[in-house]
Image (spheres, one colour):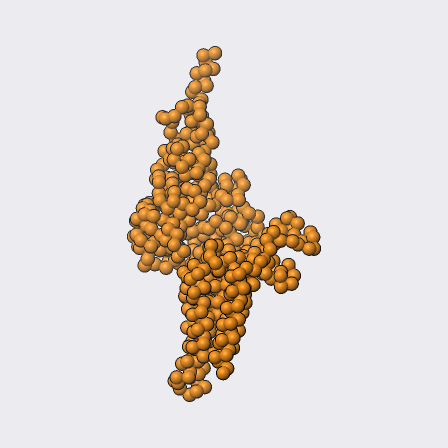
Length: 250
Length: 276
């Protein structure tokens, strides 16, 4: 599970993908997401997955990207299992259709995880916030969003410390029936929530002491600007979408 | 006895925190593990109760390899107290917080009550038994964290940075807790930056740097090695530093607190007074 979070965390690497405008990357992400929800045959979905690979390589985040896919392996198996079983009961037995359907759902999931992972691995939280502001979203909301993203790895680390402390007091997380296991999560979740509240209070105080909200209209140090590469990616995304739609519908 | 044999540990992110650490901790010893941030101290102590298992090498507690035992089994013997008490409190009352480990280890109800009472008394928390752990002061929280481990009476007590955020009086209280624990013939391992704090206990000093042990010696010898302390980014006790400035080294060892210094200075001063 931690791996998934790791795969969504920004990595500071110099690459043509990292220096793209978040808006152009968002267009690409949007195109992939829409297409992968629109179509549900394994072939199209696989194409949507494969098309990401050159970008992942260009961004030099192959390791992290694969890690986030690997981290969601449990969910993949779950999705495959549930879909396969549903088809088994609906279609009355093992069928090729049932198998392809389950496979397609799993590939769809991988495609989406991959696309989001690529986006977040290569986009700084600050850029993301700027992009959201450009979309006329109120700054408070943009800030809350980026702060949340920013704290995910910290909270993951904290969860680890809490688990270590409770295990050292004899808590066994892998033991017992399902109900007992859920109850055993309490000693982990309570401190984690309390720490998160404390942290947000601390953050609020620190922000106020730096005059957050003192003036209504904020300006930013950096302005987002689209370059040639950005237009190229947007053009590519739209063309790609048109081609897929064309192939699928005619 | 805890035996650490040529242990290497690499975190999943690829960082190697321990690079060939060997160490034997005997029953009844008092040990201070010191060193700069990131030296591998916390990584090392997490091997003592099996939270981490060595990538290479072996750790054994009283003869059994930590690979073969669960964290719960090992924790029964090796009690680890972590740095931040806020990372473990979840109960509604101080009492329940202390009883948590006992319940996990399957103690009987009346035994739990007896032990909780005893430890509340010992740690000076008796008036807070019905309070919420979150309403305690920083010092009380620390004592509660220690209490919640001491209560199951482990043979080894391992404390990670117990003095962080504690004032002088609270530090003295922690020292007294450790001292009384040692008096029972138990073993204490303390991870700390705080030399002034450990001096009173005269522990065996393990100095770590970049994943290796660079010194393993008595407090008298280790804390007088100013050059090595400097390399490990540690400040010597102020008295030691003063003694060094007063009486040119080398040849001065084990002057760690005011009593040691008195022993040297008093004869000199009385001679001077007599001469006058």
